[in-house]
Image (cartoon, rainbow, N blue to C red; front, side, top):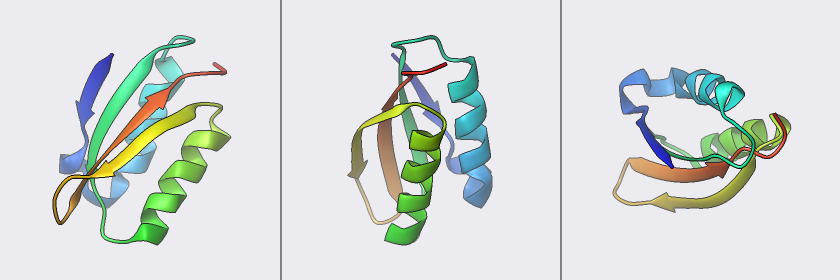
Amino acid sequence: MKRYDLRGHKSDFNSRLLEILKVGKEGEVFIFLFEIVSAAGLQEVINSIKESGAEVLNSLKFNEADWTIVVKVSNV
């Protein structure tokens, strides 16, 4: 399990997240930390992850701006 802090990418974190998933191996689990401002933005991220063939295992808001999402690579 690998953890990536994408908060420094601000609103461009989704493309970096997808890049990381592309190089992931089947069954590998990633934890991503990122900053998001709306539920609609979170849904976009979840949709992108699913479209990439990965599986969202969990998503948690742990303070006013920061979220974590746990993703498993399913179809590489």
